[in-house]
Image (cartoon, rainbow, N blue to C red):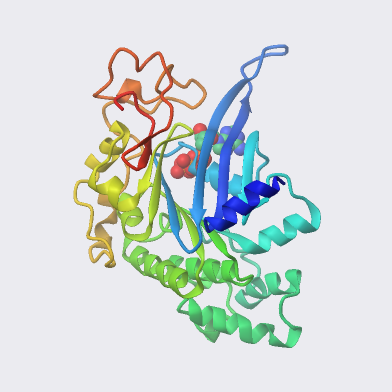
Amino acid sequence: MHKGKAIDIMENNIILKVDSIKKYFPVKTGGFGRPHKWLKAVDGVSFEVSKDRVFAIVGESGCGKSTIARLVLRLLPLTDGRIYFKGEDVSHLSGDSLKKFRRSVQIVFQDPFASLNPRMRIIDTLSEPFKIHKIVPKQDIKDRVVSLLEKVGLNSDALNRYPHEFSGGQRQRICIARALTVSPELIVADEPLSALDVSIQAQILNLLQNIKRESAISLVFISHDLKVVHYLSDEVAVMYLGKIVEKAKTEDLFESPRHPYTELLLSSAPTIGVRHKAPSNMHRATDFRVSPHMDFVDIPSPIDIPSGCPFHPRCAKRFDVCDKVIPELKDIDSRLVACHLY
Ligand SMILES: Nc1ncnc2c1ncn2[C@@H]1O[C@H](COP(=O)(O)OP(=O)(O)OP(=O)(O)O)[C@@H](O)[C@H]1O
């Protein structure tokens, strides 16, 4: 670990710093002796998450959002780059240090059913982290589990039941309770609403908001639902084909998007709701999702990324340089934008 760097990070109240991370997956291209191609799922992404803040990552399907979540959690090895948590380089932790890191950073996945063991009662699922990390005396575990259930809007009736006995929203509450068992400082929520009925999404969103407020937890919130991002986050990174193309404070991004891709995303979500108030029309949330297939041009493959600016084949504002030179992420009006227009 670079000591000087660690001190900088702590002084700025930054809990997570992701520095130029890359994840390339090998793709078999044919018979013996043929070279591999690489699928560049994440290609040089950097961002910082401040303490007690919500950092959102938004973009169309396949742009690399979930891969970033898995890299941050150290569930996947990095191809390149560094990840710092509270100033410590956690990119290559193993053994006890990795175990300690995994107590501080938790993940909530998209599909609450797939992430709960169907054969374990809720009390066993929620007791397990206490036992693994030995954070609570054995005799106190049940009380702690009940208080966690209450925190997420359930109660002791849930203790002896199995995941299939709950609705999707209740299961996601249980997953959130499980993430909270170890009192994490950071939660990575990877599309936590998208498997839920739209009528339930606002409830889970409010729950996340309350937990964040009460427990001073930082959140990396991954979503393709712009309305939710607008409501919940403090800062947003817009991703396209493995790269951040714009990063800004949420209000700035929604008020005056700079990158043509951000404009396109926002124009496909024309009536963004008012902030600081739970969206009352969450049942219409699907109206605001980024369509995985915007209808004019297909998203290029991350195996064959277009030359120059990866967005140029879809960009209404492209000009001669755009298919030749990769734009760098530059500081424009207190936000970062990767576009030759600036
Ligand atoms: N283990 C893997 N092996 C090979 N390719 C992968 C692997 N995991 C992800 N990918 C590819 O990496 C790219 C980014 O995937 P990722 O799941 O991170 O995108 P995403 O933005 O989260 O999309 P979605 O919202 O659909 O989950 C995709 O092209 C995906 O097919």
